[in-house]
Length: 321
Length: 314
Image 1 (spheres, rainbow over the protein chains, first blue to last red):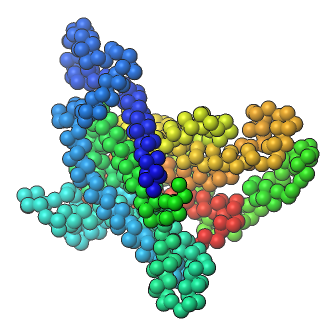
Image 2 (cartoon, rainbow over the protein chains, first blue to last red):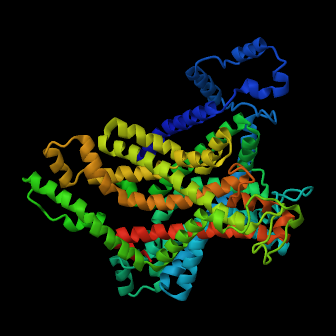
Image 3 (cartoon, rainbow over the protein chains, first blue to last red):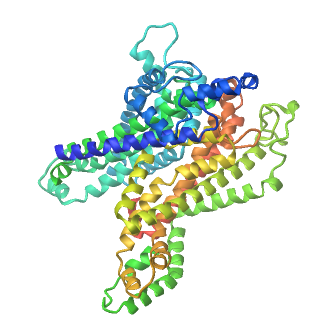
């Protein structure tokens, strides 16, 4: 177990290094450099080219790319992600504020996806080829193909504009003190929209996995020795059927994060996604860079947690090493 | 093609490479019948078949859009602003009086071409990297696979958004961004395929006969690896259509006034439009949903057709 986790941890720095490398190369593809980006193009013409060059030299932009990468990494290691060119705030602070909004959203969406997917999948598997099963399967397929932003618009139209049950945007009611109910009230529609894509796949997976397990010898044995059906399902079949669910959930994190970017933009939720979209609109490269790095690290962390969780729930993996 | 291999994998005398090579050649010729058998199984998959004709119809409409569309998708007419569906404009008009039906038809062109071309780029990269990785193994394999791991860590939409914001909006940049970044999953798949196929007897036989690496790869190994790639590519088209729609929806995609489904949905971000003029945003949204669903079903159908054992999954 320990060895397994240690091995996973050992390749972590390599992957983080890879992400920083891609991030850095990416931003260097962008036209212009921070100096020209900071200067109003109208003033640029009147500026002394030598002064611009001096500024470039002072900022180290004339150094070879490897040197610049080294400098950037050193700053990064000290937690310095640079400053936003538009809002002149430290990027790390903006990221942290965004993360505090996005993380609960992702987490709750994972919980919602899991509950919906597993419960509906079990119902489906227990009554295979019934009308209910077909209805749920159709619903799951629709969920997989549904563009989350289109679903978000429909939810907004029905739940917020039509029925007026939920707010159309934002994360809290302005002027009111923070409360969990107010937060959840605002997060309800975004959460539903964010979970639509994930639950369908999970449901289909749970269904086929459970149906397979139901034919296993130990399930037949359980029934043969007279165990109640609910015990056989819950304690024997489901436990084994759900092991791979951990992996499926882990694999869905990157697309969930991508979904959060769009959903945050639709509902105007000030998370890391909206931050990124705004930064990309204004070409605020330090923020884009920080955002790519953060999203990579979030996914990496989630992958690691998934692997560990898998080893915890499945003894076969624990002892294989 | 896969089926043929499993059917024909009868033990041949390993001492006669000529026999095996001949067997491999025979297999290659027999893929024709394998293909027709697969097509037969595909037709039995009713939803996949309906989806196939649906997508074919969409492709025809997209191709013939300049002929079929009632009006030009970009001609504005402010006196017709936001008219509801009528006989003149079946799906109504948008805020500057453009015909929604025409725009939806032309939108299919963008969605389908972005889907096809970006997946084409991704598949070429995947086959190239996956083949090298699987065939040479060792250090090359390690480097390519770690690189794949790293790219997979960054959420696809985020990195495509970043690339498009650097390259600038526009349909070609979207195709390139989605294609250049969408190869990771398929590359892993291709590598796995190569690893399993290169151990087949007919590959050893070809090597024993003195065939060069290039010939073994191009004639014996790669063609026998492509079936799962086809499934993955089909599903990739659906994913690419969704990504393009999301990009255009966020304002990073196809440049207005060119009609793209995601861009048309963008107008529903205004609450009055959302509430009062559903005909402006429902058709493109429904089209994205329908095309993605249909392409996913086709992918499922192809998978079942090529791998009958997995066909019972529901």
